[in-house]
Image (cartoon, rainbow, N blue to C red; front, top):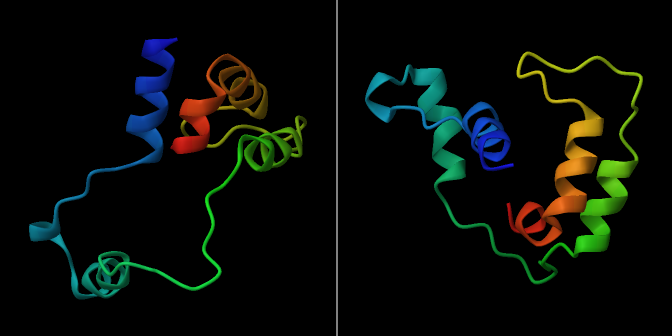
Length: 86
């Protein structure tokens, strides 16, 4: 489970190096560095995340990271609080 989660995080959340950014990358990165706070912000619930994950099409091929909807469902069932906070 730990290895799977580590792999998922490494594949889905790249660290990126700002020093290597092109102008385009800088323009993309800039808004992500600003806090986004609106009056209607609310935390996702476990039910919100479960509904989204269970709504994924199981017939679709995985992306380059190899993570299928079935894997996401199994990981969510095993550690729903962790997946929700991610």
